[in-house]
Image (cartoon, rainbow, N blue to C red):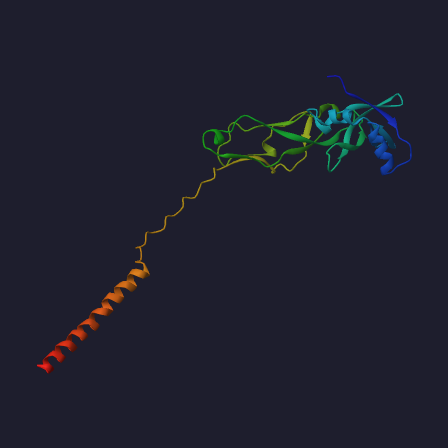
Length: 234
């Protein structure tokens, strides 16, 4: 694949928000290129060209050509800034690359296959490490580090030391670091039904009964009084 080229222009020494605003209004953004054997140079570039680099398969690990005043340099995107509100690119830092010198870069993990513990056991795949640090020559930077999870059952995992060794790059992370694991499925708790309770009689009815039961003795007393008065008259 042909290496991408970004055209850059030297930037005047004047700096500040107003200068950068005028640059962006003109369709360019401020940038800087630096390296182990060069002083930082202030530049301007087209944000769309840098965006194409960042959106490519290798992203920030893409090596491309930066052309300044007719001089070409192999570089990578070292850092960039986005507008916090609009999200568009507002600044970029480029780092000069020596093609014969090893460097250290972060490379994304790529999961390969469908885990047995997920497919048959209903488990959940937990990707613990999304990227790993590798050391290699610039031309040997992998687009991703492939991790095959096909044989993983529930509670199985892959550590850094389980990833096959590659000739072109060396993984620098601790060998015991877990990259991916299959965790058991989440069990739903069955709600416990409350024991049925006898329905209490409404208080109104109870009061009614009490009232009825309370009236009976009074009626009997009245009847006795009437009987007594009747006998006395006789």
